[in-house]
Image (cartoon, rainbow, N blue to C red):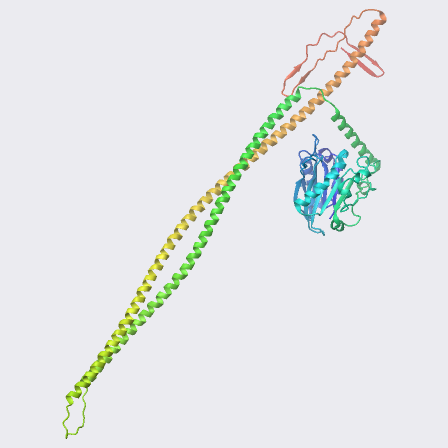
Length: 590
């Protein structure tokens, strides 16, 4: 995996509109897995987005496209720039980013451009966790900003609990900006745990007349140092790689120097007072008020959206609680149903036993009755023939009466025992049947209660479902309204930004026209002064009083921003018109 930082001075729409520059930039970017641009001045972001599309449209990058992430616009003055990182998602996954807050107590605003810190999860490297801190210091403050990077490093360690940190970019840590003596006072330089991968004698500039080590790469501790291929940290000379001639480079350097000089001159100029600027300021103030109203509406809608989301979460929790209660009741119902089924089976078994015992009792009663009849019949019909010695006279009636009484006593006792056993068995079975009937009645009552509870819970669930559906519909409607409102607000903001941009363009055009008019006026003033001196000299020569009075009276009209005409005072009659040529220069006056 290759990582690089690239500082293109004022990388914006003007440079990205040049096809040759874009062609070479695509070649350079395609070499790397992660590359960070340090000085992007594309305010709208359209040109850098277009460049990303052109970068990913090449054959080399279609299968492994780049993704882009940028910082906020940074700077203490009206001139703002961004850090923009391009990375391939198949090699590095962006985990998190944050803009360092330069607000330490007693040391506020140490950075002209606060570091934009990125954390990646690398897929094919030894160290999977990597933090990048891109740097672009202000030359005159480079010593202080480089020293403050130590605090940035400590903040990263405290926030993300990792020391796999790489600091890279334009340090401006050489030449007249930072001497060797001052370098020793910088904490990330004096701390031996920080390894500076690019030596102090390496030229990282593209200008042949400038031989300094401005661009640096710094890593922390030996684990990061071992994870980097030895001697792979070095500047890439794209002039030699892409065979750019010295004439081309010199021409581009001259163009760059000329543009920088023009930019500095334009910044140093103090434009004259104009009535147009207050008009634009009033118009911009009105636009700002409208933007504040839109932002307030957006804040209000965000609050309403959060409230609705809170209500949704509340109802969601209630619905989940009801679902859990329903599941618990269903489980209780299943358990009770199992108990009822068991009781029903026991009842059926007992009913079968009662029927069997009843049949057995009836059978035994029949048997005992039959045995009793047979016994009575046998006792009644029994006749005994006894051979007796008639020599003696026995009393047989008495003996028969005793035997009969004994048998009747035995039969009565047997009948009483059978009746008492049958009665006890019948009473026992009756009590068991009554008990089982009571248990069955109680079980049926519990089942009825459970069925009523299930019906009530089902009705409550249906009500909650309907409430949930209504809330979901309300949330969807609120989200739709919020999206429409945000979309309308964005559209209004876009229209306001376009109107502001057009107003700025009109203002710039009118300033150019005003400058041109001032140049014309200056030329006319010079011509008038020249002819005045010529006429005065001629009058002195002939010794006469001046008979002609030449005055410079402006005679033009200008159109303001809102269409108002500003006319000068009526011009006097033309007195003289003189035209002469000296040394190929034409002078004319009225």
